[in-house]
Amino acid sequence: MLSGLDMVQRLRDLLDNLLPKGVRQIAKYGVDHAEYERQYRKLVKQETLKAQTAGIPATLIRDIVRGTDCVADAKFESDKADALYKAAQESVNINKLTAKILQEQMKQEWGNNSNG
Image (cartoon, rainbow, N blue to C red; front, side, top):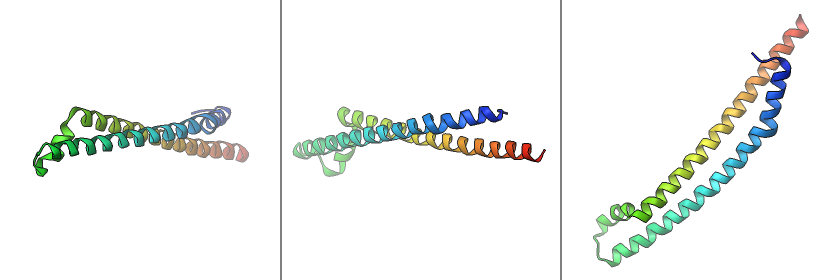
């Protein structure tokens, strides 16, 4: 278990550094994901129009389009950015939980010292 001063330092580090950094990461990854998703949707539209022009049956177009290299690569980038976004959110949630735990430990430690 951490000493009282170590807990204060750890809490201060969480609040001053880790949480703000995590929030910045969420914003960055959110923007990245939106951009990759936009690129993916544009490519789907372009490839769908090409398939329609080529006379491919409508029932097959969706699967064919999603399997083209450029669309599949764009979808991969979008999914990857989404995973990073969600991981950053979880990191912030873990740091918030850690801060709450440290606060509770400090309350208990300092509460016990005043009773002793």
